[in-house]
Structure formats: structure tokens, C-alpha cells
Image 1 (cartoon, rainbow, N blue to C red):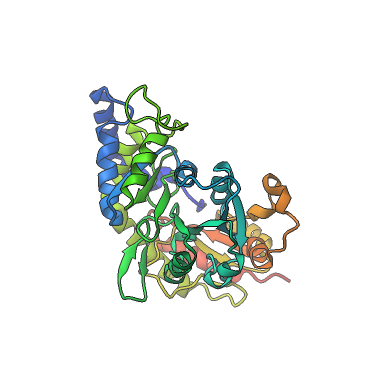
Image 2: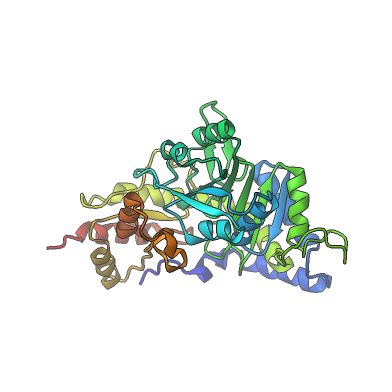
Length: 369
């Protein structure tokens, strides 16, 4: 059996460092917003090439708190990719704003810059650029549009830890430094994963960072003095210590993902399978390896019968979820087709070359009648 993801196996190389880190927190006697959070914030900001990192409770809160901190008028519109996890859209509505769905590029599955301008209205305030599957959006044209229309850019970098973007100016920058602010998730399955929920915001906007530090802590910087109606969304000291223990190995583990991706790209030869774009292998961090097949569900059952676990990211587009019933009649055919066809194969640093070759052979054998 090759499970889609076995987190105990992924974390096993870090076990001793994680135990030492957790013991350090226990012995410190300080368990909320202490040295571990500050240390991780400093390290992660440095990794992303920005001045500020603000640890929060989870990835959804990271996005939501930024949108609230920007203090847009209620009902203002935010451009959201139609092909994304529902958390991207939830952050918009939780902030009292209106999502405006924009179709993805059918080749990259990411927000299509060519479609954004037609969706911009006088009420549009921001663009939410989701770096889906570990690949950065086309940020040069997105930034140009934002500048032309006076819009903020919020990166959803929940799947892009360490991902690079090579701009037209030949400057290579990291996810987390490509917009006005970036929301991160450190959910256990991420490339940099905690042992529970955890998140952060990165930004070069010092005033935004100050406001976010208040919003995550009941709207307070000074104890018992509340400047804003805030939240309780603080990165936990234990999770910060775990993340600090694993952070030095992120680049090595991302490199291992790329090695496995090359095996997949050369090993899968089934003509009915659409492979992910391979033009940025060394820039993308391959949080997921997502293929497409017109008979996806049959392929998934076939692989399961051969002991291979898979996942679907994602089976239902956000605008077709009951939570967004007001949008369910909206036609977004590119996204809807993707959600019918995408299938994620196992991909993590603990996977062996032999396991990937076995998966490739199984995919190649699939030939429905």
C-alpha cells in the first residue's frame, strides 16, 4: 500500500529535533506569544525576503485578518480564483467582502491575468492570488493590473513554501514577497507543516504588521487595552518551535519533491493523462502533483485497487458549494471541468523512487473500455 500521505513517515527524520523543541517550550513556562513565536517569525520573514512575519492560528485567519486590516468598505469586491480551495473564498466573505470569481488558465490552473481586468469594477479593492499546488501565479501582469486600478494584492501562499517567481525583469523572488501581503498555512500536510493548525502573514508593510499583531490578540498590543475588535488567532509556541525545527530542511525537502516530479514526468506515458506544466520545475515547490483524466473517478478506483492512495484537489469548486449557493448558477466552465478531471498522486519527501515508478506503471496500465 502506498498511502497518499503518511505524515508520521514525513516527520520521522525530524522526530528528535521536534521532541527537543517541544521540551524546550514546556520547560520555558511561557506558552503563548513568547520567544519561539518571535524566533520563527524572524526566520520565516528572512526566508521570504520581507521585513515582517506575523504568526497566527491558521491559514484561513491569515487571509481573513489581512482583508480586515485593510479596512475596505463592507461589500467591496475581491477578485478570487474560481479554481481554489474554499478557504480562499471564505476569507473574503468572513471579512464582509464580496468574492468575484475569475477563471483559471487551463494550462497552469492558476488565476488567469487575461481574465482579471474584465472582472474589475468600481467596487473592486483587491486581488487574491492563490499559488495553487506550489506554483506562483503570473505576478508581473497581476501587479501591473493592480497598479493601474489601485488594488491591493494578497497572496494565498498556503501551498507555496519556498516557491520562486522569475519576473520579466530577471529578478527571482520568493512567494510571500510578491504582493502587499501574503497568507500562509502550516497545516501538517504542507511543505512546511506543523503538528496542528498554524499560520502566518508576511509583508513589507510595517503599519499593516502592527495592526495584524493587534488583531490576532483580541485587538490588543498593550495588555487590557483593545484598539480594535480583534480575534484570538495566535501562532502557538509549541507549533512555532516545531516549525523552527523543520524550517532549515525545507529547501532540501523541496528539492526531493522536484526529483520525484521528474520521475513522474518521464515515467507517465499514458496518452490519456494530462501532466502538470513542467516549464518551472526548479521554481515550483510541487506541494501537489496533479494530473488530469476525463475518466478520473475510474482511474482513481483503478489505482486504489493496486494499493495506491490518491486525493482530489478539489472535487467541488467553491461557487458550487452549498455555502455559496447564491453563486451556484454562475457558469465557470474551465474550473468546473478541472474539478471533474484532476487527481493528485502521492508526492512527499519520504516517498521512494521505487514507489513513484510503481505508481507510474499503474497509471500507464489504465485503459478503460
